[in-house]
Length: 337
Image (cartoon, rainbow, N blue to C red; front, top):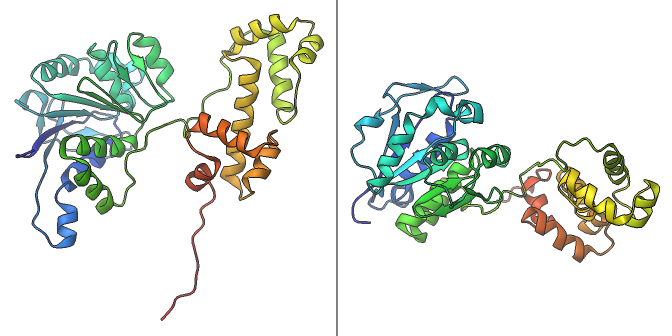
């Protein structure tokens, strides 16, 4: 990249400030901050500006005012458009932002890359450009967006997706992950790593699964299945035979499997596994018990098998999960001369 890459960060009313400021700091720091720390000549890699729909200041969801450099109509050429997250991009409020949609389509037709952060991905989806393409968003709104944009290949387990010049970031603070990914995409791994080290942030994360707090079951009206769910929830750490549960509720095992799947979206064995993993996550978040004891407490005597199950659901080993989400431990070692 011989000349600075032009980036336009689109800011919206009722937005999340960090999804604008975070990327701006990452892009600004690329080729600058590490060089300044080492006393070397700065080599700016990005030219960044903020734009609002009408060029007027916008107020964030916290009441912070952001002043743009320009209005969207003043942006004649840009290499990358990054749409920030806004509380107003929840499903029922998206139509009020549709004035941006034709502009995004035009920018893409002119060769601009498009990137959306968290709920900002909805505005990219509104253009239709994500139809039949991979995309991610925050796990908490993924189902809403899946219903509104059924042609999009939603992959909410990922922090970042890239498909045909369209980039998506999973959550508010995934803006940093997405920005670092874009630095690597356009400037190379070395520059991205320098940028991450100088800002003291980790390189881009790949999976959301360790962060998601997804409901085990969707709402349903099957009272008999609700009783079975309660049974599994109260005895998740025990071995429960399908045949026994079916007999206790006057059903055949086959009928139980069919009705349970229809009501909850999971087979009973999958549901039990989710219960155990959820309980294990809570134990790892709150204490320092050895992994073997955690495995045993949630119903697994084979700790290696437990580790495999846990990683499949969270994208992390139990030890990695506790390191990221467990009680903070700060060394208080003695100072030495």
